[in-house]
Image 1 (tube, rainbow, N blue to C red):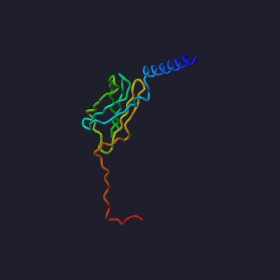
Image 2 (cartoon, rainbow, N blue to C red):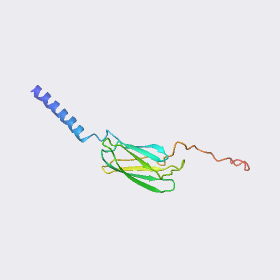
Image 3 (tube, one colour):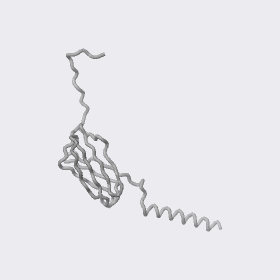
Length: 131
């Protein structure tokens, strides 16, 4: 009886592992976007479902919207270029990716290019300070 119970436990565990391997684990890969180059603007996507059609929506500083549709590779990755995009250095842009099989991600909004520095306004020397 003990032997049959142990065999049944091993069989159930193996079936669970096989089912997870066949269906894939949703937590195994999270869709991500990464800026590869600013000019021409190039992004890399990873963690998407294999061969998934992905719609990219780029919104620039002047609210211009550019869309691209790409197909993820068998590993779930892609590279997309936006040759006409001219994102502002400090104004930023937003980029969202929506896959045909449910994958979704976006870049922080507004995403600023690395060259952006905070610039302080010059002091008005002709007026006394407030306070």
